[in-house]
Image: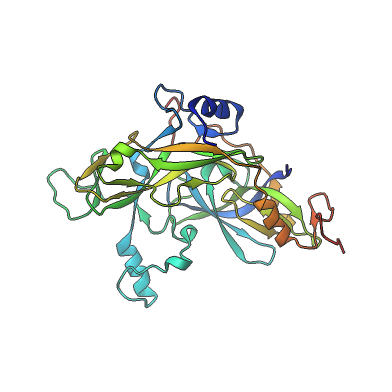
Length: 113
Length: 223
């Protein structure tokens, strides 16, 4: 079984189609932008805090972190990662961070439901 | 092989299957399925066709809401062209096929909307051994309610996501939907082995390159 490492990536986060969904832009190793879909609890602020349900507001964006897994390291130093939507792409190592802890309460679900 | 109720409970207990909140109320787990509930009403969404028409107009693509479906990128659309159904007051008439009335969503014949489930469903980040299938409920389907007619598979990827249900009314009734309604279910099956697709894709991206530990990938020259 493959063993990969839990990481997060510095990114720009937008509201998604649902309150528990975010669209995240990550800069790839060639400088282009790759768009990722991620659940809210796989996203954090730059200082590793969970996102509020309304964060960011529709039409706004914010710098933040998105969960990823490190799959491989290239000879040129770039990192091959996979994101929660299953996409695989390479990024520069300077955008990699440790992954903050995941919030325990799933989005949209009231405690005790 | 599809999991029975006994194996579904075992898979959840062992962490092979993630269902949050857990289906621990009586009746939520059937002989071979787990019921899914509609999330809060604010999670019901329709496509904002007037906004999309304006988008097309600005691009010089005409007045019709024509969508290049072959190159459609949901990630670019999400959050831009989805909106809550319009709230219609009790005495107000409307021609809309999907609208909100109080705490319910009315879906008339031909109506279509997206609505996420209260449950988040998925498999662990690594070593997924299960695959899930979203389906409607057969008795409700007889009324013309269509839930997840296409793409029912929750692939063995990572993490637990709310399931986004594509809901359509092909029947003669006006459906009244509300939070916690059970109109969908999942069945769960074992997969023959842990998928290697992700790692194979990584291999294609890193052809001739090294793995995390700096070693050449198997079968590569490492030059």
